[in-house]
Amino acid sequence: MTIAPVAVVGGGLAGITAALALAEAGCPVTLYEARPRLGGATYSFRRGGLTVDNGQHVFLRCCTAYLGLLERLGGSALIDLQRRFDVRVLGAAGRSGRLRRAALPGPLHFVPALARYRLLGPGDRLQALRGSLALSRLDPADPALDTVTFGSWLAAHGQRDPVRQALWDLLAVAALNTGVEEAALGPAVKVFKTALLGRPDAADLGIPLVPLGELHDSAARAAIARRGGAVRLSAKVTAIEPGPAVVVDGVRVRASAVVVATRHEQAAKLVPAEAAPGRDGWSKLDASPIINVHAVYDRPVMRAPFVAVTGSPVQW
Ligand SMILES: Cc1cc2nc3c(=O)[nH]c(=O)nc-3n(C[C@H](O)[C@H](O)[C@H](O)COP(=O)(O)OP(=O)(O)OC[C@H]3O[C@@H](n4cnc5c(N)ncnc54)[C@H](O)[C@@H]3O)c2cc1C
Image 1 (cartoon, helix red, strand yellow):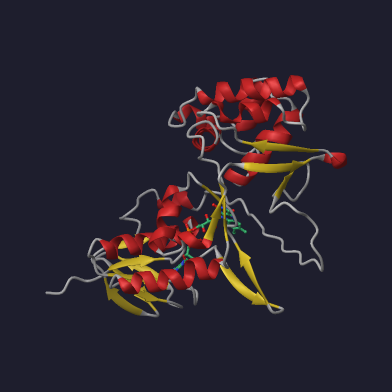
Image 2 (cartoon, rainbow, N blue to C red):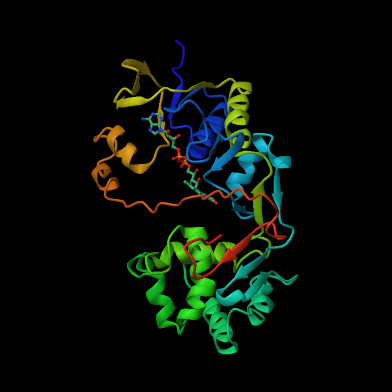
């Protein structure tokens, strides 16, 4: 009897990674993607003769699962990873600061940058250092941290508005996709401890050197096929049935297992209630939208490859 393939539903980065891992482990696998391309939220499209990227524009060196995926897709040479975290931060009235890690062991590597950070006065710099130290003592796995916002914790630890804006909010928006007032303390501690207070090289920034479609879509299709897996594009799964099986274009396809790698709202509709009794709660999870804005200039406007901005609706 032939083993039915594992069905992976959703061809974003999560689904691609799952399909590749299964194929590498010798499991027959079929990846179903509703759209005509892989990549999900990260993709490229053509407009006015330009290739425009949407979605993920930067990653950090501590994104080891993502870097591992790129390596398996043959994309390691198609990215640029900073040798040392270094970002210029623009503030109001033409002021700017620089956050650059020093050649010191973690968590001391950002101390010199914070001590010299020109967007903050001396008192706030000291508070920022104290806040970092207090944050480093928290355990992100402590469930109590999920009952408190990052903003209220910062306020309780003497982090005044200037520090929140020029430091904590700047990094929280980039890493947590929401500002300090809305972010729960638990994920904030996880992100800050992993990226900034642990390994010194964890926060080094990476950017793609080729369009995201090239980095993820075509490379993933080729990599999965090379390992014997199948990819079905424009194939929307409309139901998952016990058995298990997936229904695609009205046809029931038997599967030996199903991996769901869609957004939570879609997963809540697909996963059978008996497989996930808590499923109805998933759709109550909120979303936090993020938008890439592309501006095409007729001449160079800055020398730095990228900058961060505080007190602005555009952050990075
Ligand atoms: C504008 C923007 C900027 C971002 N910037 C960054 C960044 O700088 N750094 C960073 O780390 N992250 C960034 N992100 C977030 C990152 O892109 C996402 O977290 C990541 O791509 C999500 O991958 P995923 O596979 O979990 O989900 P998705 O990419 O959402 O993939 C889910 C896939 O499932 C498919 N699907 C859904 N339902 C079905 C169905 N019924 N049948 C078949 N297929 C289905 C969808 O079509 C989709 O392709 C950004 C996101 C956006 C939108």
